[in-house]
Image (cartoon, rainbow, N blue to C red; front, top):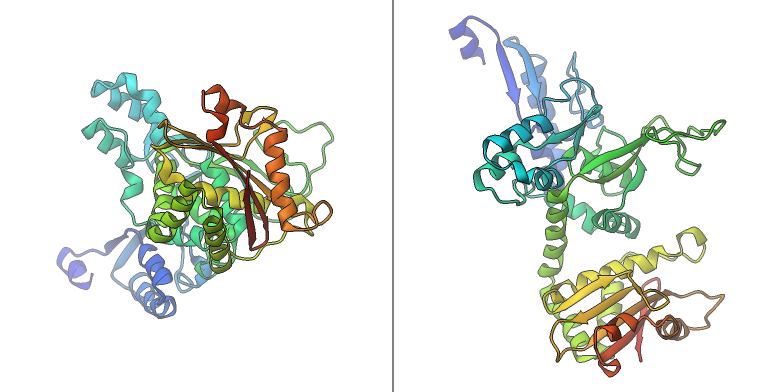
Length: 424
């Protein structure tokens, strides 16, 4: 910069793109403290004590000011995804995208492109599209995960994979098209990511993987008054934090497919164990299924027990439900795998409908041990099997001309890290 300033006779502009990418790498690979010493020194020399700088522009997806990275810098103007400034400059607007599709003879694909690549919101402006995805789509004319595949997503994958059961439950809800309601703090503190679930959702929003559906400023434990809703006259709002409160969902279909690929990769990495469970299931080997589930629960899962929290009684059931769905996902193509669908007199947990005549069908029901109802975990598993019979969950399979003797029924009972599987 000194040489540039002398040669051109004027001070220099600094453009620093993705300043936070090396921070993420340092956090993931364990040299965070050493890197912070270096980066503070670099920023001080380049952006504060540098006499040859006119002004600077830094871009990144995470705001990390509370790490004291910027503590020595003066006159910072911070623009985030919720800021009004430059809100329509961070991507293509819908008008620009639709005009480009018209020019490329793709006018009939507008709805598909909107589902895949729309959803980004900056400030109060929604309908912003990712330029990289749109440019690649115009070139190839194929719907695919273009932008989501340009980064490693290693930090995101690690945080979700090692997160609490509650975080995994919320993540499963997002993958199934539901929303998440949480407070957010735009100032990401990397040292808190492993313990603070709110920081993880803030990071996902900053990355563009989540979008804001609604905004509120009410206590999450009271009736919520979202800005897009009309609260009842006289309704009371309880303020509990100075951080904004949001309802979030996955940004678009491109992000959904990216996260599905991440989850699939987790199980691909554990292919020997994964295949052990599938082989046991295909053989109807309940003993091996029990051994696998209990070993995995003991060595992998964190302990959770909802016995003293009635409002959270379904969380362990949903956690195991999601885990078993992940285990059997590779049976897609051989089975139609459905979850929480109606059949008979209620909604089953998981159903396997075979695509080949020689394969069996299966219905799986999950139950949490309740000491008020059951004496043992075996009682809980038996209750799950009886619910399959009582609610006639096999009605759909029978309507598909599958003989009843070709339908297996499994009851999964669990209490914390203990699992018991029984069958009819």
